[in-house]
Length: 238
Image (cartoon, rainbow, N blue to C red; front, side, top):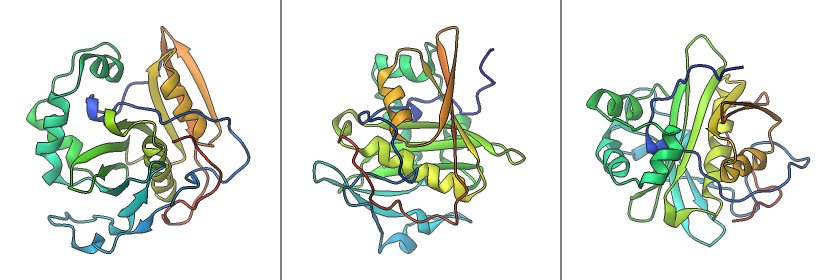
C-alpha cells in the first residue's frame, strides 16, 4: 500500500524529532510527563498581532526535565521571518530526514501557508525560550471535511531530549482532539528510531505501515472536551 498524499507543506521546521522513548503503558493519552504540566500564561490575552480566531487558551508556560522553561503558543503571521531563518539555517541531515530525501523550496506563498492557519483544521504551536527565540514547533494539517490530520514536530538541536518534543506532541494532540480530529498521521524513514520513540511515547494507540522505506504511522485520538493543558501523569525520559 502506498502512503496517502501528503497534506503538510514541506519544511524543516516541521520535521518530527524525539525526546526519548518509553513503552506504552496505561495512562490517559496526551498527558505530559511528571514535570510541571504547564500553566496558562498570564500574558496570553496580550500577544501582539493576534488574527481572528486566535485561541489564547492554547498559550501555556511549560517547565522541562532540565529545569528550563518555554512559552508555548499558537503560531502567528508575524513569526514568518524567524521561521524562514530557521529553515534557511537547517543542516543537510535535518533536511534529508524532513523532506524524505527531497530538496526543499520555500517561496513566499509556502511561508505564508505555514504561518497563516485557521486554528481549527490547521494549527501550529511554537515553543519560545526566555528571550522569545523559537526552539520548537508542532503542527497538524487537515482538511475542512475530514477528521484526519498530518502531524510534524521539530525541536532545536540544543533543546532535544529534554521532553520538549513529547510535550509539544501531547499539547497538539489534545488541541486536535478537542477540535474534532480523530486521527493523526506521521510520515518518516523506516529505521528512524527517534521518530518511532516519539510515536510510542505518545501513549496513543497507533498502527504503522511501511512502503518503499517510508513509514506511515496513524495515531488514534480520544474524544476530548475543549482544550485543557495536559496534567502530569507518568514519566518520560527528558
